[in-house]
Image 1: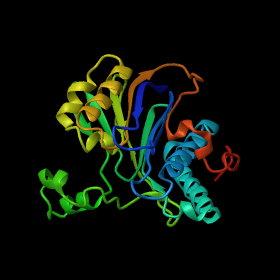
Image 2: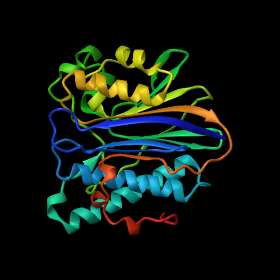
Image 3: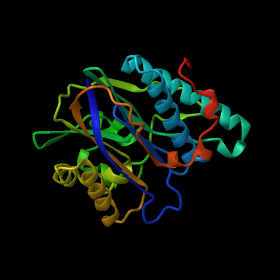
Length: 268
């Protein structure tokens, strides 16, 4: 049975007052959610979405990965919609979501937005996710060279998010992974300021906690102009374990989660 041996780090950065990143790391689930910058109550959106995905993943251990992650995104949208209807200050809140879920010998990636997932194998770094952003769309159409993305004025325009206005379905991918592979999930507080060669060089640290801390340190050294969250997970094989896991960023504040009692194992 595949599971993760993980390391984590989340930091508010050197400029922002609040950490709108949220995350969870456990033996079978890794996720990062980045409250969309400039939107109302981004930390509420990221914390609630992280809670919903985590609660359903832990409460339904026999559900297959793609089905559970899809239903969790639907449930998160429902919670954000209700929260926005109850408090107008939450109108416009939204978040990215990138999650990997291990079930037996299968690992599923779900993505909404531009928080990234990477695979480190035999020293080589591969990006597993595709940014759901305006600039990535322009790159895919051949209208923008990839090397000009970092300088584009609309580089932070996200085309898909988990929000309270429009339902969204995550991009799903069954990952071709094996024991010994290392995964990285991160918010754009890392990838906007640290290059992939720099990420690759640090990802080889033997301890995943050291790798996560060093990656966040690189982002802070580059100016720390955004919240930054990194989850590093090594794929291992072994019997099922019941370790609870770690809460990160905004998810550490239970007051940011909208109506936790509404989410239970049977939620469709």
